[in-house]
Image 1: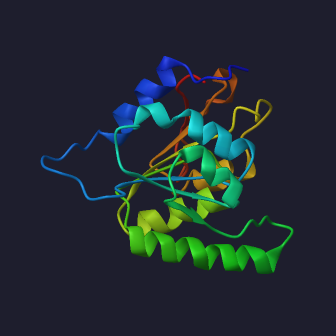
Image 2 (image 1 turned 60 degrees about the horizontal axis):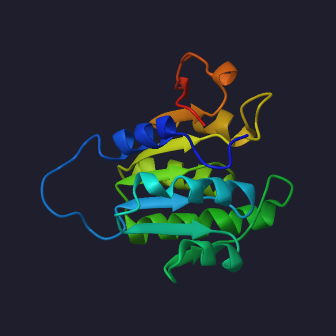
Length: 178
């Protein structure tokens, strides 16, 4: 597994982010990067060169993780998973509120519950989104990745063997490098 992302995935991410490049200045926080702590957050941070010159808003689940962004503008939300239903409901409300306040145009996530909720609520408010499944998921698409296929504009895998065509209301899973 490469520690640094390939130029291929960074170029694809730049293309996605600037695809609907409107003229004029953009509002602050027009890009939202969101992931839970640990590996998801580390991977998201490795993709920063794709939009490093922008004023990106960041959300994660642990304050220590925010220090890696080099800014104090990191929003924190509750850490939750399918086993902790009450925590998951609190997370849902926190992410909804952040999306409502920030109103991002583009959402980039490397997975987990916060990213899934952000994509769902972002779509309601008109944001475009890309879900990049973790490089750790070499055997199959993550649970978040499976669920988000109905909501995200694009779903990417970092393993060529995990790419899948669109089926019914589910988006395709595309390989864009790792």
